[in-house]
Image 1 (cartoon, rainbow, N blue to C red):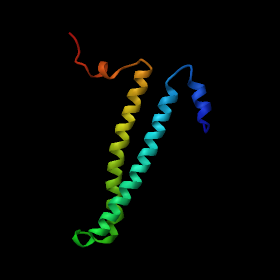
Image 2: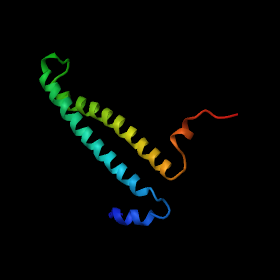
Image 3: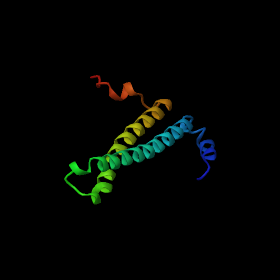
Image 4: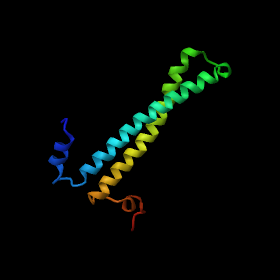
Amino acid sequence: MNDVRKLKEQYKDEHPAFGSYLECMTRTLFGGLAAFTLAFSSAYFAQKGLRKYLPYNDKNFILVSTAVSTGITYFLTSRATKNCQAGWMAAEDKVTYLSDHTPEQK
């Protein structure tokens, strides 16, 4: 499906909070893309500035920048995705943060 409005309309009755979940996930994924871009460029130019102090040559700058930005992006995006999922479940009355993290009663 390429039309988000049709997708929201299709699942509106079955999952009333689907629209807000979809918007949250869209923000999360675009935020992850922005985080990757900023982290990559920051790491790359930091290495360029510290070139004479680093134990590796210029050929490895892209590899190191990619590894650093991938780790940062994974951390931020996975955390935001869990928040979106928790919000959707709470809105759908499936589970809340409190019922999911309280010790079991005997």
